[in-house]
Image (cartoon, rainbow, N blue to C red):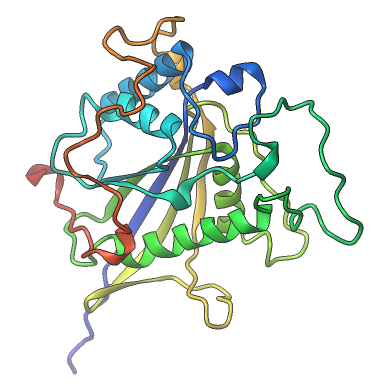
Length: 285
């Protein structure tokens, strides 16, 4: 009897990275989906992150970034010395921080509207803003799309890595989506506590099958594809102590520039609607 060929398993990791310190962070101003601008310290944090990523020499296949200025600045400083000119780079509005509507631009201590009775903290929306559940849904879509559409299942390497430059609130909700906290009663919630430029690593094991990739399912919701993502590391900002930190930003970086240089491959197209990325083995990269 002919033995069936065993399907090869493939791992995908996403490294969620919070932006560097911003002027609003330093002044304790609520940013939400305002652009934000790095401080000189924030630029140095991003440069330290870049030194770490270059030193560790982990093969990165693509970069996704929130389109907000503070993330674009962080991404520029973190990848400019090693990322190259051919790998995909996508700006994605779905990676933005939670919108807090009319509270944006206000000090953290400013009065806020009282949450109506009968509305849970997860469901509450600030005036003209989003709820945490709204952000959770965006995070869930990110995990589903990365697991099913971003990478070509015929890629050569068994482990693929994606950098995602985003925001503290979005990172917390991506961890919650990974742990399925909104669907499993009693699961503890991850809180919005990421340090500036900290790395959170999530992983999923997928199976190569035909011309698409399927993830290992676990209690998928009806009509909603799901994949068993695992939290691999949280709030890792060790680069801030391992590499030299000063109060000066990199000398050639203008923190007032609203359009920091991005790789020539930078695109705002919906990456999940494009042909998947085929990764190469390290010797061919």
